[in-house]
Length: 47
Length: 372
Image 1 (cartoon, chains in turn brown, purple):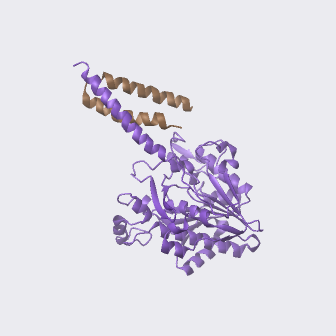
Image 2 (cartoon, helix red, strand yellow):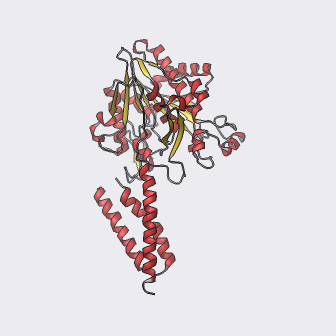
């Protein structure tokens, strides 16, 4: 169950990073980063 | 031009990783256990998982300190940290573990009952992660946790939580240890912790249980002894003793239809005499100003003062606030009075704790001088 949850969070994180580099508007990139940091924390802190 | 957004993306990603690293480090620091230096009266140190092995290597496992006199008497359980954002309960349990010696009977102390709850703070409260006290050996830090289990350890919350006794509660209460009794061996982590405490009560032959809490000054169940009906006489005698000492306590009967709480299920399921003590804590109330270390330790808050002037509180609250040393002194006085009352009612199961700091001394000098 935990591995599945990790995989879901990892998938969403990769999607966010992918869109971070595709997005051309700086302010949209900056907004995306606010979400990305939470996903990274979730990804690495989950037990 | 084409690479401009890639450069911006790379810089923002680097910023994200930096922010993530430093915030992650802060979060992880909460998983470092507080230190405790038990008194020489300690006879055994166990883990909660010794009573329920399924808890081993989980965030719910926690230390259990046993002070056994080997002299015939009763068995006492003192629990702090059921709610890790109620520091007077935890600190009283730590103070007792660092000072007492059992002269008759046995005392079992769990300072951090919901160990997972100590690994995070309540979201959106801005509470400090720790507070400190000056002791003879220097400054010691103690964690201020959350009321409930860390969602990193128990997730997701159900929409409606049906506790082991069938009571329907809000989903977040699935992580509240004081709604999870008598626990469930195959349930949520919090229910497993409650199950382990029930197993401890059975295996250690506990006869009297005291659960130490705090509540917000605007909450009516405050400065109170909440008792299971099998401890009504015990609580009434203790209240009279406390009043004679100058500590005002009100008596609150445990509602029979409010299930899952220590003062209900320890009495119903394990048949032990059970009381829960409440002191007033401004740092987790809703009317507080900025939550600071000083608010936890000194207990001063101008907004609570204003609320008291408007008659909105259930306890007196003046410019001196309600400091931690007073709240711990109240708990110590409560424990002492309950023990005296228990010994009077059950002389053949008497429990005597020696070297316990006096409430008056703790109130006058603070906790620091009594800690190691």
